[in-house]
Image 1 (cartoon, rainbow, N blue to C red):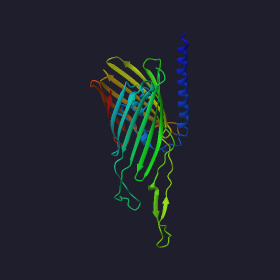
Image 2 (image 1 turned 90 degrees about the vertical axis):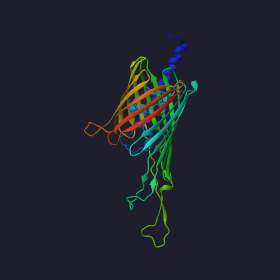
Image 3 (image 1 turned 180 degrees about the vertical axis):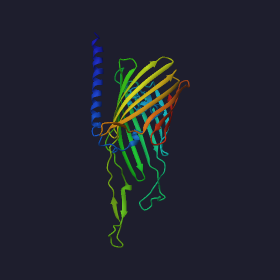
Image 4 (image 1 turned 120 degrees about the vertical axis):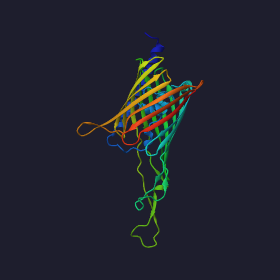
Amino acid sequence: MGTPELMGGLMNSKTYISAGLALALGLAGSALAGGETSVGSAGAQELRIPVGARGTALMGSFLGDVHGVDAICWNPGGLVDLESNEATFGNFNYWADMDMVQFAAAHNFGNLGALGVSARVFNYGDLNVTTESQPDGTGEVLQPKSSIITLAWSRRISDRVALGMNANLVNQKVKDMSASGVAFDFGVQVETPMDGLSFGIVLKNFGANMKFSGYGNETKFIPDDAEPGSVRKTWTLEYQDFELPSSFQLGLAYDVMEDPINRLSTYAAFVGNNHSSDEYIFGAEYGFRNLAFGRFGYTYASNISDDATFSQDYLYTWSGGLGFRFDLGATDLFVDWSYTENKVFDATQWYTLRFAF
């Protein structure tokens, strides 16, 4: 038998894990409730856009094994697994001339845990304004903007369990209209007693509904039956609030092979969405001497139709990518690239630089 201190520590760890899993499942149940009826009703969809070349190459399947600054946008529980400091910068070419720039940095404060910050800025390009009377355009050009600022924290509660959370400050702006809100993420990573096997649980984008407001919802007009010389009246359009695209995510990671020369890791994840079909994701990463990496990911999303058959219902199909690590002395530089195939639009690519120092 172990000492009382050892047994007490084990019991505390089990209590933490059980409480965390119970909370995760409880919140997940509320998030998934009504998912079939809320498809297409959630806003702030930029929260769903994947971040980083490694994560997108794996289709986000690595929830149970993502570490360091990359974990901020995937599973905040893994943020604590960085030796000291990390910073990353990435650029993402989206469809229809849209793109996103992302920056993130993190520092490990030891017993206090790790703190990180991330900024995502979206460029939607120029949109020509059209009206019912001028369908070819009024000459006015809109430049919608949105951004997400994330504050992240993560800490180990035992040698095998790490917890983390994010506060995502979301801002959207179109001409004189804007909407702001806060979306919270909660994540846990657990290393199992089985060598090479770990899992992660993530609850993403939980928060109050958002709503657009501003001067852009006011219109001045003269009623058709008004007397000549009548003063124009102001008509105010009240916008409906919208939910955040919350989801429950569960990921497994297993190192099939790991030695000083070769490492092969496999991943599987389930994503239960409150706004769209559930997703089943698979990925694999091969590393050679911890210097070169090859990655692959595949996503399947399905609905059960009236005839109880499954049909694919997702834009993305497969992805792949490469990564390289360069030893710069006191700093390691990681250069990553990913390519994601799309069934409807052009394929998308991510380019990321990450520094560990």
